[in-house]
Amino acid sequence: MAHMLTRAYPPSVAPEGPAVYLPFRGEDLLIATDHSLLTTNVMDLTTNSYFLGMWDNVAIITGAIPADASLPEGVQTIGLRALYDHVSEEWWSLAGYAAQIVHWETDHRFCAHCGGEVANEGRTWGKKCRDCGRVTYPPVVPAVLALVHDGGDRVLLASKSGWGKRYSILAGFVEPGETFEECALREVEEEAGIIVTDPVYTGSQAWPFPHQIMVAFTCRHLHGDINIDKEELAHAEWFRYDDLPQLPPPLSLSRATIDAWIASRHLANAAR
Ligand SMILES: [Zn+2]
Image (cartoon, rainbow, N blue to C red; front, side, top):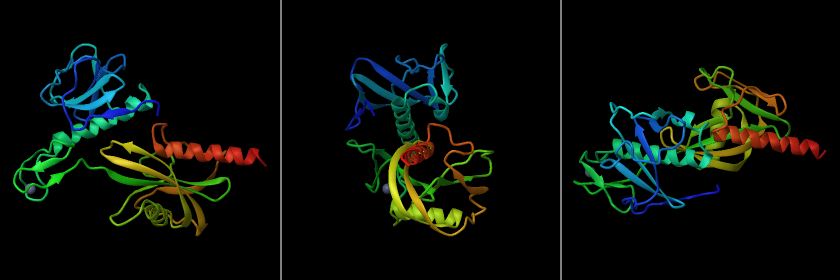
């Protein structure tokens, strides 16, 4: 990543000077109709606004506007997935961070322990219960992606109902008490009915739908034939690296994981 956000801790007020505004109406971000990000406070983000930090010398400010707010000329809404086609990967990640903070600030209003009202804790994004004092932090939910290969030129890809002709690698949420590696092996066995080994970490990606962190592994097939869980998958089969079905869109870590494996097979076969 070329740039990094210098996060604002403790959460505070943005300094004067250049800023990028990331206002949300519901799940959608407001951007200019030419698909550039907003550099003026057109939606008057003042009372419900959150300063995320500095990107070089630019303040990053997000917030929520009312669901029925009308938009000024030159401004439109866009879903986060569609935004990926119009901004760099870094800015897309920042918009995802903003979405998660807005979600947290808008939705988390009561203590899960006693039902009391919560208020910002002050030093972090945590919220403290006015009654029992319990502090809760924004949720980050880990999910594992598992690319299963056969040690050679074939990869296991699966399709779910509703995906049409698209195939991807397997995925599942991490259970309490489980490591990422254990999760990868378990998910593959549960969903595809095969035993895999050698989980190797390949990367991670914050996934703001609504607040996952995706953690990717490759695993090698050890034994067993494909026997899918029909509740989870519609179809799964082995594909050669040079004869693949329709794959996930480029923004996802699942696609990046598949692309990296394909490149590794090209290299391995060119070296022969
Ligand atoms: Zn409480």
